[in-house]
Image (cartoon, rainbow, N blue to C red; front, side, top):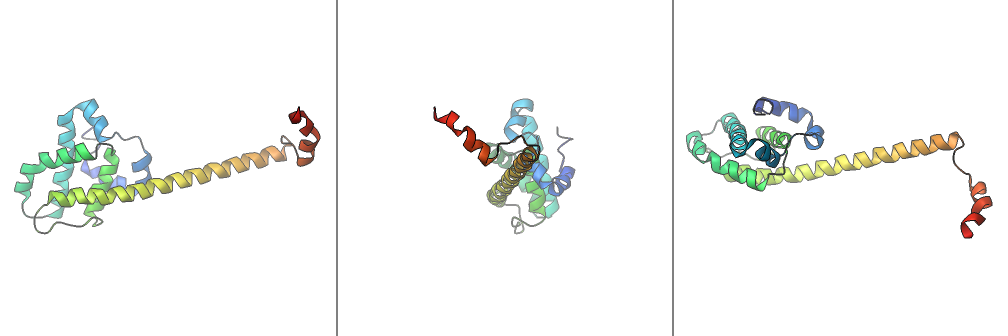
Length: 168
């Protein structure tokens, strides 16, 4: 699991945003249940350390001492997020979508950025659902048109003729 969802996969997540949200990657809670808290903490530590190293800020040593606390806050408050969603978050953070650190690593910047990411996630999921519903509607309309073309549906006149059957 740690190999499959390593920080190098973040780029793939950014290139496949909808799949991050709709795919079958496990959530943080599922990882904790399947592999235990130590594996989840290790995965979060790897992702957080990668972010801090990328940002090139001072205080990496100090941050490494509180990484466990930051990981616990993320796991406890955002446990419903999938690994792919968090990897997308970290990639987007690196791309500058969610602020930056001012000289040193501030855990609140990360958790506040996660709150902003949740808004992005909600908007994206709503768009995905609208697109899915639109596609289903078009499919139903096409199926109806095909059934009508094949003569499987009753015309308005035919309905009027047999309408007495429903008034019994």
